[in-house]
Image 1 (cartoon, helix red, strand yellow):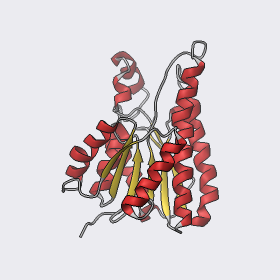
Image 2: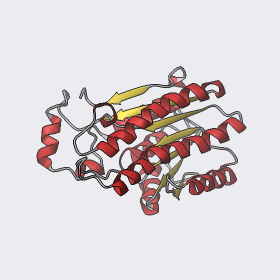
Image 3: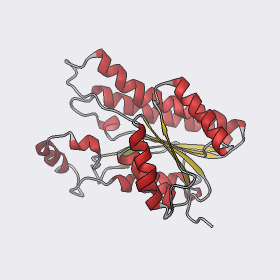
Image 4: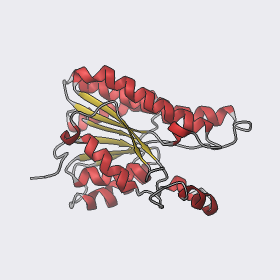
Length: 254
C-alpha cells in the first residue's frame, strides 16, 4: 500500500520538464501521488517521469505519465483534460501551475511580442489550466488543491523584467480571486512566490549578478527546487486543509 501525505491522489504538474516543476513531480510521487508531468518539451517531461519521479516513488514509472502541453493553447488544455479522464477515469485533484518563461529586456527596449509571449504563458496559461481542471472537479464534486507558482518579482519588481513581474503579480491576484470563488466547492487555491532558486533560469544569469543577488538573501544562498516542492506538496495535502487564497514567499528572507 502506498503511503504519504498525498497517497492515492492524481496530480497534474505543468512545467514539469525542469526546475520547480520537476522537483514537484519528485516530491509528490514520493508522497504517494500519481503524477502527470506536462511540459512544452515532451522529452523533458518523459525524463522527469522515467528518471526522477520513478526513483522518488521507489518504483518504476507505474501509472505516472508524461504529456506535451502548451499551456497558452486552450484547445491543448481541453484535450489534456479529456485524455486524463479517458486514462484515469477522474480529473486530477492536485494542480500545480509551474509552467513559465522569461523574455527579459529593459522597459524601453521590450518588444510587444516578448511582452505578449510572457503574459500568454505565465498568466493566461495559468488561467486556462486552472479554469479547465477546476471545472472538471466541480462537475465531479471532487475536492482539490491548486497551487500556482508566482515569483517574488511579482511583489517587488525587478529591473529588466516588467513583463515577467507583471505576469507573476497577476498570478497572485488571480489566485486570490479564484480561492474566493472555488471555496464553496472545497477547492483550495494558493500561490507560492519563490525567490532566487537554483533552476535553469538562474543558469542564464551572469555569476556576478547572482553574487549580487545573494547579498540580499539573509540565508546567503540560492534556494533548491526541492525546497519549493516540499511546500507545494504540503499545500496539496490535507495538512493544509484551512489554507486558501494565500501567497507564500519562499525566498530565504529576501
